[in-house]
Amino acid sequence: MSGIPQAETLNVTFKQRAPLLAIGCAGEFAQGATSDIGALWGRFAPRIPEVRNQAGTATYGICCAPEQGPRDPDRFTYVAAVEVTSLDAIPQDMIGVTQPAHEYAVFAYDGGIGPNLPRMVQRIFGEWLPSSKFELDGSDFEYYDDAFDPRTGTGTFYIYVPIKRKV
Image (cartoon, rainbow, N blue to C red; front, top):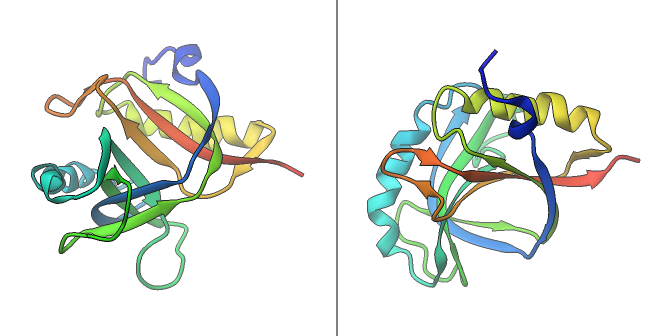
């Protein structure tokens, strides 16, 4: 067991969110083999000033279907990104992502980037979601605001899970 208090770990709120336009650097990863995501953030962070039309200072970690080839449930594309007001000017070697308006189950996570994060993700998608009255309905993302310190990888961030009611 991870030692994370379970009641605190899965404290969920529900939010309706407007569409999200984001620009960032992408990488393809296998489920469970995500140790290189930190390196992706390391490449993107110094390039954030290149992104025009930024909306705020928050950053996003967006998980979506692989960019190339057939859909593979064991692989996903992760985009380290910032929100923008327009996708008109995408810097070289970056991509634009559009998340539609949606209802989300939002999980606050105060464990930082470290060994307990995979357990949190497993609890959300392997335990909470299957036992809830909802099902996954799109791409999830992480939301990092001023409560998170990217230099140390510590602080609170939020995991947004797009949901719809089961029928």
